[in-house]
Image (cartoon, rainbow, N blue to C red; front, side):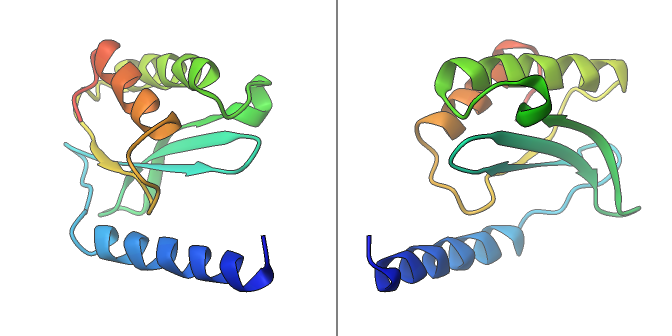
Length: 118
């Protein structure tokens, strides 16, 4: 892709991110689940925006898992276990500007299957 197309795609994602983030706010009862996906890896963290602390996080790179649908299901089950240990059963899903399909949708569905309501 040309540099111009890459810059346009990045700016559109940032616009979506800001539009979503203006409406989403997590607290201690329902924290915000923010995701980040690069071309290789998938990351997720659960944040309490009132205190400004991360309650739980998972790193696909440290787990040795790639950014595909099968590996993201494993990442989601690992995050669900750590959320259950912290007595968190409901989160607000912040897709961080990414479109809700493919890997992002697979991650969200796997979290729901593991007992975390979004």
